[in-house]
Structures are given as structure tokens and as C-alpha cells.
Length: 381
Image (cartoon, rainbow, N blue to C red; front, side, top):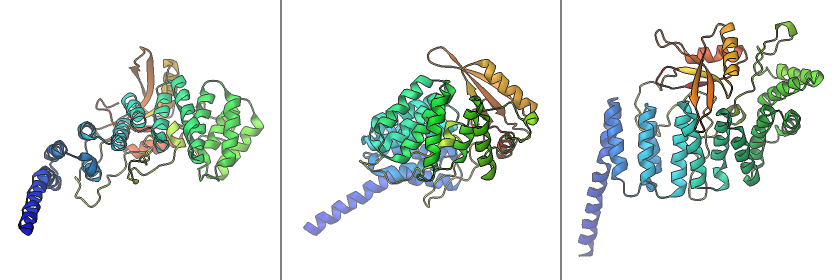
């Protein structure tokens, strides 16, 4: 009798597994046929059918990585957030949502999602989410909020290397808010610590180069320029030895350049939040397939490269003129913040017919001393 009961329960469990995994099987078949819509529908049905999605996180992320469409990926993640009960897993999904928004150039929803990812599971290892939120607030011109948030990170972080990164971002805020002496003090101290924490000193050297220039400290500026040239030179085509040929452009690198890449698929459990990758400064990473057959269409196509964002339209227009002087097509796009103020973004649009090679354009921008990141906006900007 006991054997019969065990056999019956096993059979029921088997049929239940088939029932709940059927949409996933259909989705994987559709992946092999490169049918994006059926793949999306199958994954959505699978998520909806899960009574305990918290135990299926790796399968969930394989499903997300199998989608070449960012909008569909976001829809799957939105549905997943509704089903998840574990705060750690909800935080992980919210952070991935934020990274997708960021790749699309949608900074406001990305910033909110990063902040919510931290607030959902506020432990020390979730602090990288709050750092990314602070960086995006900076890009949106919300400098006071950005500083308040990064100071919160500094008051809570326990890892010296994380403090280094947060202090670097704080130094940038000092520089942009006319506290140049403070920016220089922090920057010098961080430069002494780069080797200890395995940080690349070049962005910091460039930061110090620009700060000493603004302070009129010619001798120290030359020291940082020599260090850059010795190390191969970040933006080496921007720093000319002939002062008469020197470009008028003196942009500070984007905040994302100060943060090293951290793999998203690090172990994640109730007491350890998944680290966050840096996505602003590079194109979309290849999908993590984990052995499953993935859809083969190319990654979402970049439609533009954002080179700067400003609270004052004149600054965005000056940057656009400088880009045009180097032969780039450039435009200024206006967007409105919640408080009614405006943000002005300087963008180099990419041609779709015939298509520009985004990487080629990005390299050319770097050669002329400009840093930027890809946009995936449907209106071509």
C-alpha cells in the first residue's frame, strides 16, 4: 500500500511538473524557430503559472536573456515583480529593470528602479543600486539629491573599495558645483589609493587634469597630463601639447566611467544582494544563455549617442556646435523633469539608412575627446 501511494504521489507530481512547464517548453521551441512573439507569450504564461517564482530565479533570468526586445523584457520583469515575495529577489529584478531602462536612455525610470531596488532590500551589499541611482540623478541635473544619496552610501558602506567609488562620485559633484578645492583634495587622496583597490587611474588622472586646469594650477595640470600620456592616455587625442591647438572641450567623464563592471549573475540569496553591472559606458552585453538555445536576432540597435546632459540649454548647444565643428551631426533634445524644469541632452544621432556603425562613431568621438553612451530610443534620437 505504501509503495502504491508513493507511486501515485510521484505520478501526480510528474504531471504537475509537465503542466506548469508546458508554457516554458513552448517558449523554448519558439526560440529555436526565432519566433519572438511566441517566445514572449510562452515566457509570460510560464511566469503567470508559477506558484513559487522565487525558486525559479535562474530560469527567469534565462528567459529574460532570451528576449532580444528590451520592451518585452521589461514586461516580463514587471510581471515577475508582481509574483515575487522574497525582498532579495524583488530587489534583484528591480535592479535588472533599471539596467534595461538605462540602456534605453530612460534615466528617470531607471533611477527610480535602482532606488526602489535598494529600498526593497536595504542591506550593505545592495548599496551599489543606490550608487547607480545617485549617478543618474547627477545626469538628470539633480545634484543636491545626488549628493545626499551618495553621502548616505558613504555613511553605510563597509567595503573600502565601495567607499572609493562613492567618494569619486562625490568629488565630481564638488567639481560641478564650484567646490573645486574640495574636489582636488578628494581626488588626490583617491589617486594614492588606486593601486590598493585595483582601480584604473586614468579616469581619475583625467578628472584631476580638468580640475587643476579650472583652478589655474598649470604645473600640477602638466603633471597629470604627463601621467596620462605615459599610460597610453585616456582621450590622448584630446590633450594636445600645442596650446594653440587645444580644444575648447573640457568635459568631465560620465559617472559610469568611474565604476568597474560587476557580473550580474553573482550568487544571490537572502543575505547577499546581487551586484550591479555598469551599463552606461558600454553597449549592451551579450545575453547569458546558460546552455539554452537563444534567439539569434542582433541586439537592439542603437539610434544615437548621448554626449552630454545639461540644466542650461546654452551649454548643450555649445557642445553641439563643438561636435559639429569636428564633423559630427549633433542635436539638442529637451525633456521635462517632474518639478517642471528642463533637461537638455546633446545627442549624435545614428543613421539607419544606410546604417552607421555605432562602435565606429563612438571611437571617433573618443578620438576627439568626447565620451558618450548608446541610446535605444524609438524616435531615432
